[in-house]
Length: 362
Image (tube, rainbow, N blue to C red; front, side):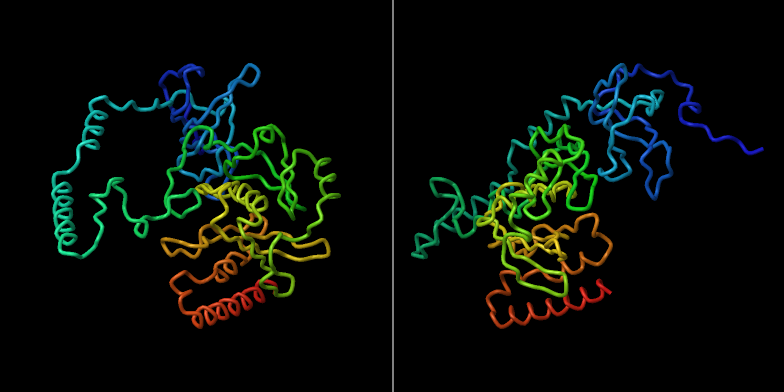
């Protein structure tokens, strides 16, 4: 007779701790009930406790499975936890913290020597009539404007992700976009009053978010647009691309960023849309132009990037539309100096996108 598989609770003989002692940061085996391709249903996996709440007489825990993507994070009941194998978070020693702070506060001797050599050389060059301004000797201590990279919130520079308990938890249960009802993957900073609703309704043409189906029906009687509020720059059969200026069409661009944040974990741009252009890919039918995905680019990129963010909505993924979005991207700023080269590259990319769309639609 085959031996019966035992759960971690049955295999362990260590005493279980009280459920009240499980708090944020603890690692505990959790019975994974969502089920993914690489993990069978009702399998035990190590998870980190992100938050906890009281539901009646029982506790519920929001957990992140350490071996899986954050999109599988979920609320689980206390019965799904193995309290015999709870690992408490480690506390950093004060000595280690003092060493880190002291090391970070004290500058490197070699770095000071290099700065002094640069300072002396620049002073000599300025004294000889070179007319080069020394940034280290300037009163403000800042670099010249030509060397200073973009630091605005809309730039492509890396921004530290606010990885706290609020932004790590999915705050929207479901959204309804056109004929699709989608379960979001990540946190998005929608208004607080929408987080308590079971479904957030989004107009598929202007992307305005509403809290009820009745509000959406009332909005449709007033919404007059049936395509993204921009210029149509490409069409092949029922596939079209619209170019949106983040400054001229700011409400639409902001709503688009909020929608994209539901499916992009590391997106940091929400409201500062002025420096960006958005290219919306749509599918046309008798009702209008329905959004498939988009990509955005900076109008003036200091790092010479030609794509800032790209997304295909979940209902249209694994259908070839992502390849079309990638091949349709505009040329970079360095290539824009050669007008003939830009036109040739645009024609090549549009022809390639044209062939891709033909294969996708077939």
